[in-house]
Amino acid sequence: MFVRICDDAVLFVRSREDAAKFVRICDDAVLFVRSREDAAMFVRICDDAVLFVRSREDAAMFVRICDDAVLFVRSREDAAMFVRICDDAVLFVRSREDAAMFVRICDDAVMFVRSPEDL
Image 1 (cartoon, rainbow, N blue to C red):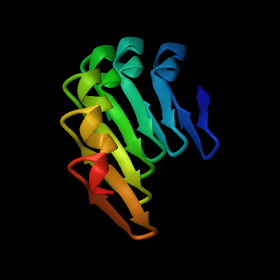
Image 2: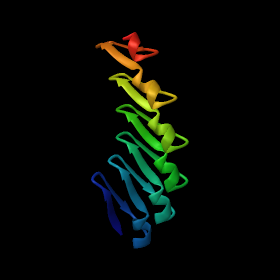
Image 3: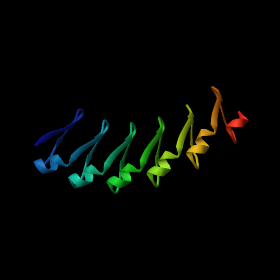
Image 4: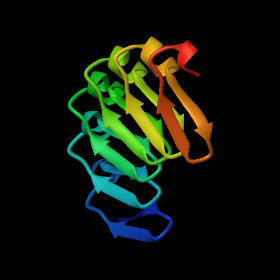
């Protein structure tokens, strides 16, 4: 039997069960998986990346920190410590107080100050 698995592909499969194992994981990828459980472990973490993860908990640890970067973090608390300080820079800081000490002084420069009085 012929089965359409995406816009650009038609396959001949032996059974409906086999057809059900073709899973579209993103716009440009269709995979044959052993089970629906395996299919659920493919997680889209950003526009251009799909990963196979061991668990939904692992999937939750992929955090988009800016347009072009996705990181795997140990905890949600770690994820909160990635701070975008300007268009092209993301830093990991020890605390939110440290993050507040990064001051944009012009379009292309950010400085770290020890205290607000330094400004």
